[in-house]
Image (tube, rainbow, N blue to C red; front, side):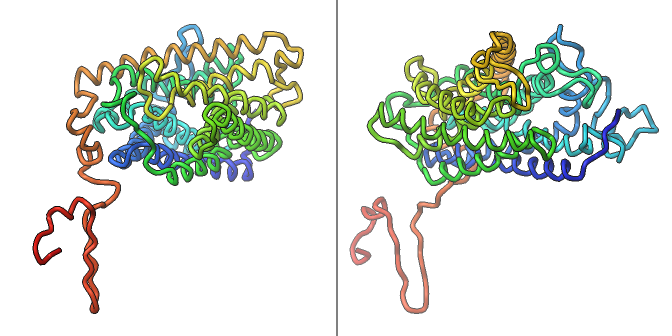
Length: 459
């Protein structure tokens, strides 16, 4: 039975889509502040280019790959059912249906079909952008741009279909994780965070470490940008999680509150770990804890109680706080801790559903701690590890392909002088001498580097 389109649900989902889209510039600020000053523009551009490439691909065929009919769980893939939804116009051979998803009758539940298209497009964009933090300061912009295209087609679009496409919603047959396996992923713990996090590890292994990794300090150059980015991410994440209810009602409200409290608990947990381990809490720790909590509650937002959300956020954040140091132990250069936060946080949040799923929650599933046994836990584990293995293998192969063809890394001299100038002929900050002139006085403002060049009367 076809549901009537709801104006309220449509307004909520379109607003949520805008919030999720804002998360990508927020991520650009967050990542941009964490790199050194000579790489801030390139880091931000890696997020922005994802909006360009994935935005176009999503309309042409990405949505069709993710939300067309699935071949079936036995081949672990989703595909477009022929030309269905190509260009969002429906089957071009069906001349009576050329309006496609623009038709007033095209719906996804209580939403116009294009509202759902818009919402999921923003998920696809930020999923790709998240990976970039693992290869900061050393990946060529051309190589990264090609990666966004290939990874979107070969990794994200299929995995999104496995996880987000439910039978009968946009196609007759949906993805195997959502339907056959029955794993819970409310808003993308597997499809986005495990997917992006483990892919970041694959890229870091192929590209190798930055020059000076492990021997020279590579501190964030602008913590104000990091804190601004974390704030924008938290703000946008309410659209990410609560918007995934696809309706303005109880489910969205539960997800909203769980997103708030899990993130709050995660921030406190990360700061506590820092205090106990290092002797002082830091602003970077607070920002990292916020993101870790957001990542962890993403899959669980509709299946745990608010108290359960506190545990999910705190446990996952503490795990992430320790996991970010593993790159030094094992020697992989995950520049901005995509593996430590997104992979570990996504994995923790996904598996903790098996423990904290509350039967009174909207999902109605029962976790181990509520007497449900291991039933939901094994489903969560199978879904999480299947995405992990698929994403790592395909991402590694994509990275190798780019390395052998157009090349991945910038030259050593360009890396040392700064990737912003090498790749974009720009600098994030103008630190050259500045001349101010007015009718009264001409003032010369000089840096220390200019002083040795001053001679004679100019002194």
